[in-house]
Structures are given as structure tokens and as C-alpha cells.
Length: 131
Image 1 (cartoon, rainbow, N blue to C red):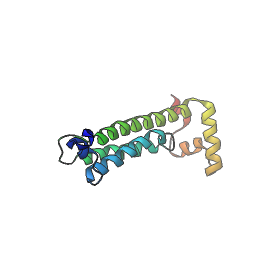
Image 2 (cartoon, helix red, strand yellow):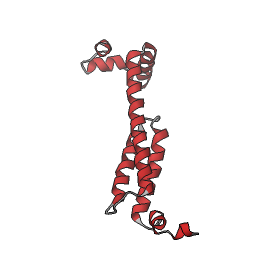
Image 3 (cartoon, helix red, strand yellow):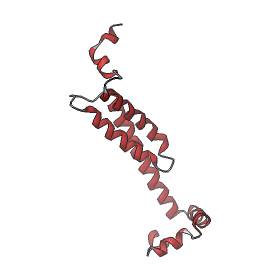
Image 4 (cartoon, one colour):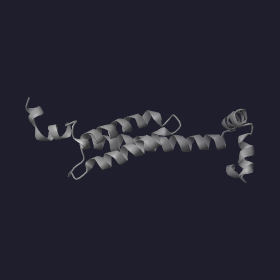
């Protein structure tokens, strides 16, 4: 029972304190950013919001709340994984002919124009990117 009468425990778990609720919300966003980085790269956005909210939750306190520390950790992982997935996807599309053909087919079905034709309209071509 001593644990619940501890000042630091009560300070870090007081749900009425706006700093605690902001840090808790940031932690939840940070946790969700990790699996969501595989879906439309939303993990990058959620991870960034989690880190910013965790930094804002500190306010004028000397130290970060435990929830804020976890939010920064999970948010950073979500951001790093999101960028890794994005870079890996672009690399595979540009180097693997099978993935590139799938992208062309999908783009043609969705837009009526292949991905290569869109690149040519922008003044680039797939062969220039490979070199």
C-alpha cells in the first residue's frame, strides 16, 4: 500500500493533471505508430505527433513523465520504421522489374496512365533513375 501513497507515483498517474493525460495520449499514439507504419506510412505522422506531444507534456517539470519517455521511444521507432518501409518500397519499385510492372499495371487501372508515362511527363524516365 506504500506504493500508492508515494508522491511520485501519484504525480505520474494523476489522470486529472493535463500533463499526465497528454503524455498518456502521446504514448498511445507512439504505440499505434509502430504497426501503422505499414499502412500508407501513417506511422511517420503518428510517431511525429507522439514525440511532439510527449515534449509538450513536460511543461515546466524538471523531468519527463514515464509515459512521455515511452511515447518518445515508441514514436521514434514508428518514425524510423515508417521511413525504412518507404525507402525500401521505392527502392524495390525502381530496381525490381516485377514490382515495377505491378506498379505500372496498377497505375494504368487507377489513372489510365502507367507510372512510366507519368515519369516522362515530369521530365524523367525509369531508365534515368536506374543509372
